[in-house]
Amino acid sequence: MNTQKELDFYKSITQKRSSQSDSVKNALMSNFNFDKIECIETGASQDLDDGCFGLYLAKIVESKGGSYHSVDIYEDIVNKSKLVFEKYIPGLKVNHYVSDSVKFLEEYKGFPNLVHLDSWDLDLINPVPSMFHGWLEFVAIKDKMMSGSIILVDDNFLKGTWVNWREMIGGKYTNNYKKIDIDYDIIGKGSLIYHWCQKEETEWDLIGDHYKAGDNIKLIIKKR
Image 1 (cartoon, rainbow, N blue to C red):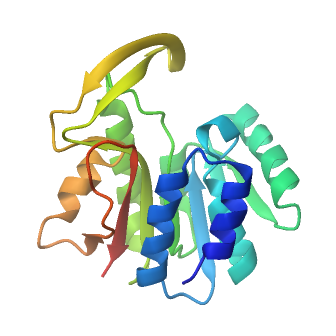
Image 2 (image 1 turned 120 degrees about the vertical axis):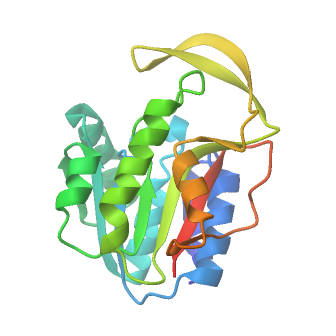
């Protein structure tokens, strides 16, 4: 699926996630062959300073046809997300939900073929809660997706990367920075998913050629 026009639209709004969006565009071009898209985003896109990656995915849905679903546990974030989508893609009906993302995915009745897991902000100083939550989201939705479907998982850093990381207190980023060296194979929301997908008995494969040290990357996986 060619999403260059949708990518150009997204980059005209923000360059914050430019390299990530390039990786996703390339992966969709080579691996995604559905006529209509059923897309879910966990962690509502609501702040351009953080990229609002959902705008790219939602624009794809608008252009290609299908449905877009966005869920976040915080009502104020969902309300901000509604304003963002109304401003930039006013013609698209976005289905917004206030819910715990794992519960939402467990109860979801559809058959999504494009899912973006981006809830529970990553804290590189204490990454376990975020990576565990990402795993629970994956387990909740993976069996509802058909062959050829793609899952994106945000905020991952590979071994050899170092980051000036904003410390978090009470789930909020502060203005204090700490240098973090990534010594494990991968640290991020998709850490557990990354390792699981490399087992021979799984139905999911890592795709893309962007798994390199030095940047914040999205894990991209495809169901066989």
